[in-house]
Image (cartoon, rainbow, N blue to C red):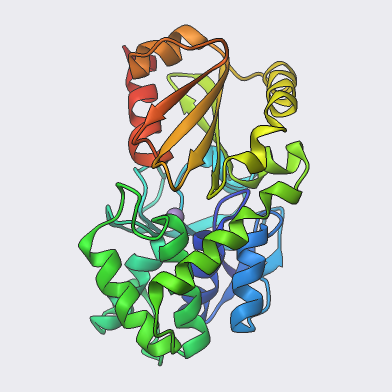
Length: 307
Ligand SMILES: [Mn+2]
């Protein structure tokens, strides 16, 4: 059996890309974890079922979307047969056999898939030429909006905006801004979540020069939603660091309106300060203009670890 699957702690891009790519490749979409409230909202809005939860790659053919880091994938990835990666992140794995690898430095994996579709090139990645239905176009549009934080993130490219427009037409969404705010607000149910749920909503593991580093992120329109939970979040991060062998954990509370992130830092604080050339005020610091983990947080940290 062949599965298309995104990363652990799946976000809307991972889920939407898996569903749409599986449709074109005639195989099964899957997920490696629980659906977050934003994705739940999007799936309900377009009437699409959530993909099957799978936990092992054993005996399966695997197509990865939206990541290529081993630490973000199946624990037993090597037990399966990896046949392709479709992504928009840095290359994070090596393989022993040739695979199909297609990635582009754009705002979302959904953008990559949409471009292939609109250029009538989906067959280049092994897909069948089929029509993109309104519900699936809506999923891809939502994924672009989510990953680019409604085109505010510095990861946003012209291609993201262009694809969003075309997808909105098919999906029958006349006002992208308005629809985008709806999605971002759905993400903002964080106010109702428990601290551990907030931490796990979007948490990714990295291996920097042999050290385990965790970077979590929560995006809010209204910071007061998490303000009262910050102390508890910090305590849980300290426990996580100890229990799961991290060298460093950074948790970003991204303020969409202020266009910056407060970073809560646990563990190797010197490394964090070196990477960002900042001084922590206690356990945290506000990073002006920092909204993208991928583009603005991972690269300086990785660089600092490698120096
Ligand atoms: Mn993505």
